[in-house]
Amino acid sequence: MGRDGKQCTVICAGLLLGLLPFAARLRAQSPEGPIPPRPGAEIQKPPARKEATIKVRVALVNTPVTVRNPKGEMVHDLDRGDFRVYDNGVAQLITHLDLGGDPISMVILIENSSRIKPILPEIHKTGILFTQAVLGPTGEAAVLAFNDSIDKLLDFSADSDKIEKTISQIKLGLSGARLYDAMDAGIEMLTSRPDAGHRRVLFVVAEAVDTGSDRKLGELLRKAQLANVAVYSVGLSTTRTMLDKEPKSSVPSMTPPGTFGRPPIPGTVQTPTTEQQRDASADLLNAVLWAVTHITATVKDHPLEVAAVGTGGTSLSTFKDRSIEKAIDEIGGELHSQYTLSYTPAGSSEYGYHEIKVEVDRRDLKVRARPGYYLAAPES
Image (cartoon, rainbow, N blue to C red; front, side, top):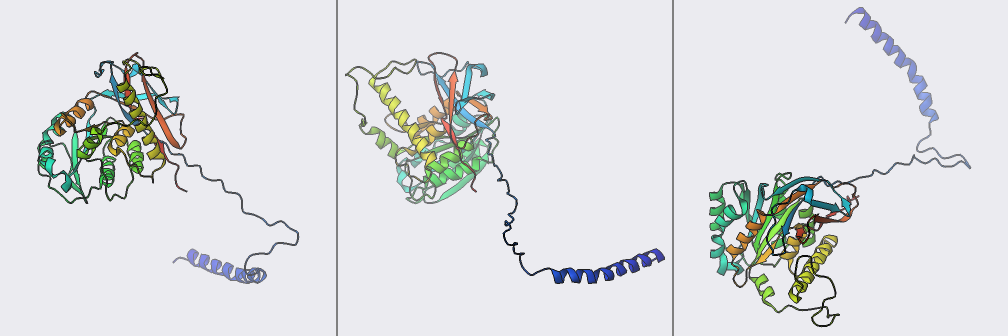
């Protein structure tokens, strides 16, 4: 150490020694514990801290949009200027519109409980339909099977041979059917796949029955809606039985026979059948709203249909002349003939249920899209 360094050390040591008595006097004058207030003086309060305002923004909303003419045929000649989309009544800017060409990321969820043993051979043959009619040349799929357990049989793959082989080799499991837990696992897997310019699809082949799940349907719908996952399903025997029953009318007619109390759906001929269908659609929409706003409640009736309506998908049942293969083929045809519309929500950031409304600037066309999504406030 040089002479300058030694001088600095000596000076610093001297300063410290000189400050020690001063510090001791300060310590002696300072009382132990908190300082009591003076008599009559107002107790000083810490400055008020502003509560942090947490705003949750939905980065992107994708919705499948199916447009049909009065004959029920898919309409394929619309462009972005023909559509109007509203989020809680606020007009939105459409950032992306595609007709059937966006790549599909799909989780194929198949029930393999012992209860579906008689139709398992039919399910084994559906692999080629999934790869050719549903996924198309740019799609990818993962395969899950569920009963009492949930088994990932294949992670996401674009290899048609692997997908088909996996489905053809599904084995029977136990008698349980943890449908909601399995759907939750599929939705969770899909959240890792690309979103912008892609379609996330959960395709369920199962009975409309859940036994033993920890999850509730409302939870799944909230998650699927925010993750832009559309649920498509082919209902097996239980749904077939329910649809074969005679429909029940819970609301008595308030109009004379042969007349209707409301105008017809544009582009349709008003009949008792069309009115029953309209009532059924309204019931499903009400069930969706109930499920996502009461996520701990149990939805007992038509869970696959509720999940499909709530996410913009489709639910078909195997009954009469509609086989599992035909139902899958129908859904595949719709997937490749529907529009995918995207927007980033603006001007509508309230918590709670957000209604999505899609309109087309052409008369007599019937439009189907996902009805909305639920934006929950962050937990404090």
